[in-house]
Length: 388
Ligand SMILES: [Zn+2]
View 1 (cartoon, rainbow, N blue to C red):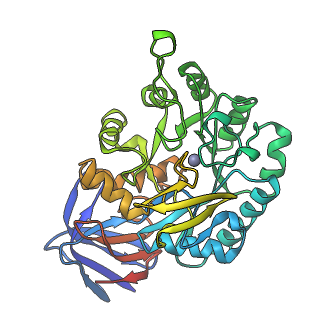
View 2 (cartoon, rainbow, N blue to C red):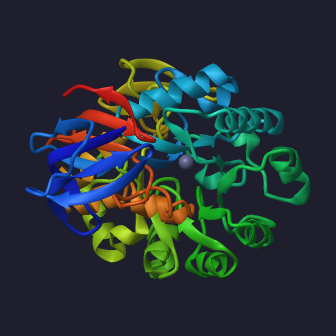
View 3 (tube, rainbow, N blue to C red):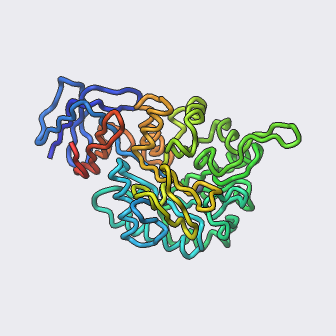
């Protein structure tokens, strides 16, 4: 079966091409300019919509009322499909700080669903966020379950699963550097997260395998002036360390647009990935929810702890993240898309197969309008949703 998409604004790596693509089986087999349409068994007139690669979210906890920590296959499927409806065709299901048994169970379930995949949104592996954080920067991670990544503490969580692609951990806590050396040596992306690190500690982290920072400006120290002297926090340190990429929760609330612009100017789209960090209430009505054992209120398009002390994850979706960077931070559309496709794909080493509209890659695709409203999604060459 050959499907031809024509009359699209095709989002390529560094430009937008007016034309289309051809898909055969599960792969993209041709990219063409307008006027050079090839034959196809099925032709989709995109009517000037944007055609982009499917979005890739490296940091997502839940959505549609379910959380990956529920530890059931049904919950995993609910979250996957909730985000796929908003254009995210691949993701790293992400755990939260909880008991070792609960984290281990969640990881096991995620891996089982990943192994039994035949169609629909893809799990590319798991992201372990927690439990290895600075207690001062716990944010919405349950402080009861925060402990350092010693051999004894990591054994129960990491044994028996083989699909971990990313670990978020504070680089300054006990045993973190040895842990980062070991895990990065296995090809796992090590992200500095929920950290109170100084510049020196971040630099040491970077020398020992931390190559990324989790939700920059959220759950980390920022510039401060103890005894008159100005000190960089973990956030500015990650910005200035050339070998560190950074992640932004691009819901337009966690980080204001002026800081989104600043980060974009400093790091560029090649070293920023957008994520949702979404919790169970993504794509759900306002009201009261749970994040682990903590009470959360959804109001005004954000999730906050009921006691008002912190954000509690987000209710963002992939389309909203791209829209925020495109409209609020005013970056070109192909750059906004790159941060939700090519850059995350490169960070977890799946760029050979996913993350751009390139001949030979899997046909994971979205069609969306100027407001980044998803109108059509294809995953693995199969139509997933069609609202054209
Ligand atoms: Zn977090």
